Image (tube, rainbow, N blue to C red; front, side):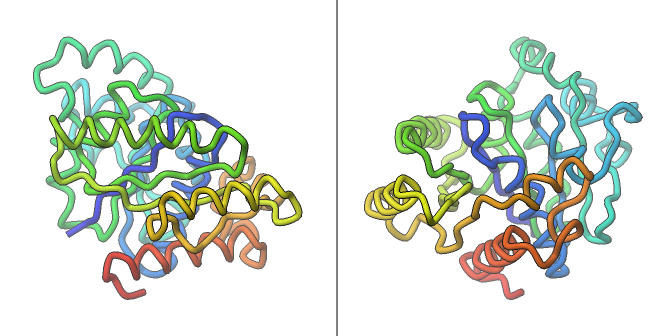
Length: 257
């Protein structure tokens, strides 16, 4: 049965979609069956695995709002065991449309839970906000993985996301847990990066993954080519880091590579 992991941070530009795409691809490379769910109206995870959003007739929006069968929406990717439920800009309207719906916080759960037996991992890429789309993702998930950019305001943003997780745990998903924090955009030559790492590890201890995602030019280039980093440049530091992160995630969950 799939572990459903929500990748969330209300701040933009922290490596959230980069982590969703490349962690999904790295798990698929380890021969795990992975479903990547794009819950961001920008659809960057969709284009990041090579899907042309302008050619899509349906997206996750249609499954959530119009009860379209997700099998009619899923798209194959270059990696045999990685499938995506794509997003288009239509999803932006879902925030408003969900308000009027009964059980509005559980629409994504209704879609994903019947699919659990078909996958080892379901990864949800959330929008950079804490609205109803992110609440739906957290209500459907077993755990939350938080990418954290090594910058000055990192801990401030982290306190917001941990508060949101606690609220969801209280009222919507009592089993939700924090999977861990992934430090991203790390530059070892930069004192600030090292200070942020030290502070986060002091505050959160074992919840912080040992694997650190470095600043890496090849990692930044890969999305414009519509390819995860392991397909764009397997020899890069970025590819190595995400393969290590996938291994660590599997080890933490008792899943062998």
